[in-house]
Length: 198
Picture 1 (cartoon, one colour):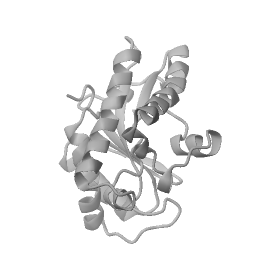
Picture 2 (tube, rainbow, N blue to C red; picture 1 turned 30 degrees about the vertical axis):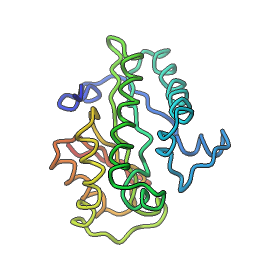
Picture 3 (tube, rainbow, N blue to C red; picture 1 turned 180 degrees about the vertical axis):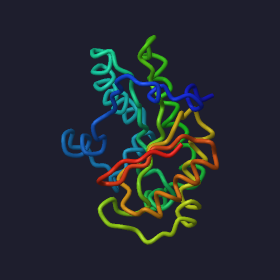
Picture 4 (cartoon, rainbow, N blue to C red; picture 1 turned 180 degrees about the horizontal axis):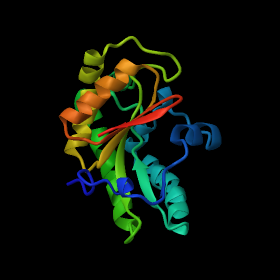
């Protein structure tokens, strides 16, 4: 069961930390090969899950050192239907990857959360297409497409979703509508200006 979905602690004030660019870190700093820039594929092996946990712990340590809360984003920026098909994932395997990614975060929260330092679990989402090139979906198409991933998060312990690097306002509208329809708090961020939808 989601811990903070109906009462997000970051809305009550205080400092919160989040991570600093998972795919960039793994590819350009650690030298990993992530197909289609997809870090959720790391969930398929224990070694990959251990790497993810180690990545998050670096940021969790920063939050602890400064007495801050944490927004823990899942490794699922590319875990949507079109990207999953390119990566050979069936719809059931994609659903499992999204749900299990949140379960991994829940385990980290259980070990690292302390009184006064809440850890919020966020299902990370990305654009249907290239993050640097505007897509052509209308809002209804975007709502239908992204509802697949949002439905997985709604069935998990995710407290909220974060849709980032969007470059098409209709796609953002569709995501916000799909999130609202599943009672999921949602943060929308374009490549230049973040907004929020509740």
